[in-house]
Image 1 (cartoon, rainbow, N blue to C red):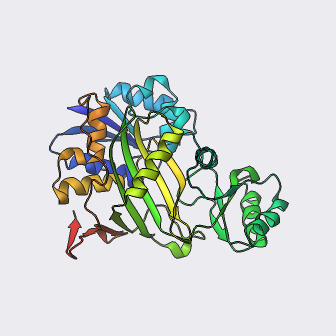
Image 2: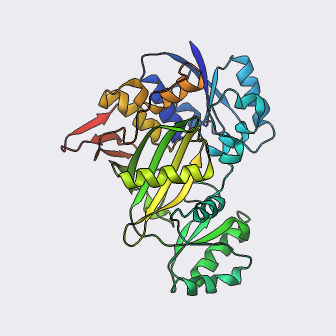
Image 3: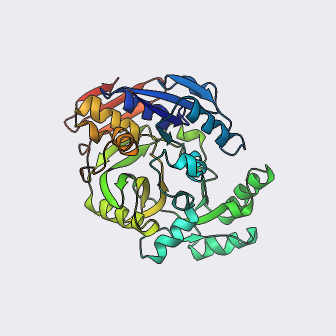
Length: 358
């Protein structure tokens, strides 16, 4: 039985990753880690180990100790922050299926600049050397509104749609005053009011193996978040759009000539719903991608390799060396995923029928 280490296993993505492996007939011994002792109780793992945060100098030594003590065959770091520090360690990197750390370390601003230079549509983006430059930013964009965003992080970190420069100045100064950010952490972007799309893909030595697209429709408790975004959607729908496929593939190849592993792309439509790339995360699954893998096996009854976490682990273990290309749009079009706290997960099919994801 192969032994898998899942770091960040207590988060939504980590819990779903473990679920995706447990639904497969093949058995795995899974060790889960997390810095939150309560969240660590959620995943269905064989052994739980609490770790410090990835930024703690004891994080990597403890991960190495776990790998040695349990003879770990493969490591899956779910959070992008943990993917980066693990990919930077030569010894641990050998037990992963991650891109190079230089690719994982791309932040939002670097990604936007690289894509713009390669004629990939992106939101117009500005940085600030002084807080007083906000007024001219809004004037250049016909008065706003504009997105204030963090160059790094996830879940809408530091984000707010600001109507004018006074509002933006107050927002940025609030974070600086609380010692939770500095001016250089922020970037300013034009507001894209159109559809919110996620494109998840899996690559092997430069070849696209599988992908799917979904539209994010609603977020949980969006009324309590200034940005209206709270990390992972409660309502999302599988869509099939060849233009999104082509645009996302091209964008990934701009930042990595030979993609290898997981690449998650965020897209947003402008006022005419022309798609723009807003972010690329390499080396991680979007939090619901493992859940779609579980649904693929449990509800859709697809070939086990359509369960992307399983395919990823098999490739990472070296048990598959020449993966079959599954192609784009691997999940049924117009399938809607409904989920909320204490309400369970549900699939609403194209024909209107509903199935609970148990």
